[in-house]
Structures are given as C-alpha cells and as structure tokens.
Image 1 (cartoon, rainbow, N blue to C red):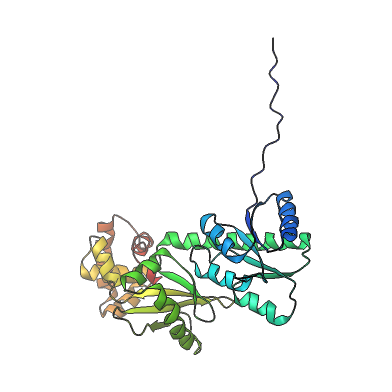
Image 2: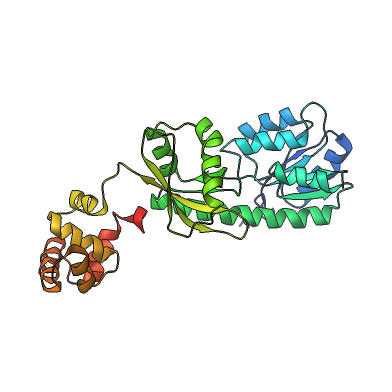
Length: 312
C-alpha cells in the first residue's frame, strides 16, 4: 500500500505591505530592496521622481521611501505631487537623505512627509519606523472607512485649511453645489483659516462665501495634531422634521415631536419648544408609537436617528 506523505513545503507568508523605494543611487536601492524583502515586504523601485509617480499611479503602495535629492524632479516636489492626488494622499512618505539641516527636515515635512531618516540609512531603524507608520495608516484608513459607511458629510482639514480627506458623501455634495477641486484648493482654505483664527467652539457653523449654492461647515472637533474635523451642511436640504415626514408615516406635528425625541428631549422640553403642553406631546407620542410599531421612546428615537445622522 502506497503511503501518501504530507506536503511539507512551507507556506508562503503574505507580504507585510507594498513599499515603493525611490532613490537615484543603485547601490542604495539594492541594499534597501534586499533588506526589506528579507523582512517580508513587497518592494517596488524607482530611480527618479517621475518614474515613481508613474508606478504609484498603477500599483498603489502602502508606504513610500523617498530620496530627497534627485535630478530633474526632486523628492520634495515628488511628494507634493503625490499628496495632491486624492488616491495617494494617505500613503505615508518617509524621506531618506544626506541633508541634516533643520530647513531640509522642515521642507520634507511641509511637503507631506511623515518622517525623515538621514543617510546612510540604518535598516533596523528604518523597518521600525515603517511598522509604526504602516500601523497608523491602517488605523486611519479603518476609521475613514467607518465614517464613509455612515453616509455623513464629514471632512478634515489641516491647520492651513487644506482638505486632507472627505467622505464620498461630502465630495458628492460639493459637486452638486458646482464646486470643483480648484475652488477647494484655492478658496476654501482661506475662508477656513480666517474662521479658525477666531477659535470657534465645537458646534459653531460658518456659511461658505462666494457660492451660488448655500453651504455651511460645522466644527466637529480638533485633534492635537492640528487636524480639524468638519461637517458640511446643505442649505437646501430638508429640515429634520421634513426628512422624517418624507420617510415615515407621520403628520407634520408628529414629525416635529419625533425629531425632538431623537434629540433626547423630554416631553416637557418638547412642549416648551413647540409651545404646547406635555400632555399633548404624549398624545402625539402614542400615535407615533402606533404608526412606527414600537412601544417606547427609545425605539422611536432609534428609528428617527437613522434619518438624522448628519445632525447628530
């Protein structure tokens, strides 16, 4: 009887990520390529900036190691072009260079780099820093995907007012308002910088100027890194009660009561807002519960919040 031996061929480990290494020195490329492949990374190489841009546009890298000083298109300009591409803007860029003066370090960070290593590069240090920035990028992308899936009109900007990322819903609303990338790059930052200089509180809004379509931005919060989270508000969108009336089988007054239930207001507070008695509010609630087939205000509020995400 023939014995079937188990397959003892070792399994191929998945790549830890795709790294694009850009350097005009073949010796440096060879050394980094060999070290990173040994660490389990998939390595792409480019000898100059334009070649790097062409590769990145076809094969999205997880991280880019970029020499600052190269002929024709240097690393600083290459990084700026990468960061201007919405599909590549979130890819972390680590600069590698023999320049050690403060101005060069600042120039690299201003261009969009997340880190700076001086040559000759210490491979152990390089790999350690790559792990950190790859992990940070993964966390940021996961958070952005979670925000995208909620359908909210959210976006973030830098301290200079430049857009860093936006949910698809935000970009769609900008397009519907007739706003293109040129306006977002040239007009929006100035308006936001001027507004943020006055230290607005969370929840305050700014009407965007020089537009035919009414839009506002609402401050959601600011991170210690200087990144600011904003919500884009559609001036032509229906009000909260109108949204509820459109989606649910409720009357105009019932939609107003349900709206404030979704905002966490008590019957007494709703009565004060709508200039009616708590007893009347309760009668409306009884009709709302019946129509929505629920038996408590928490369930009713949960239904309302499905259609009020952009107001939370």
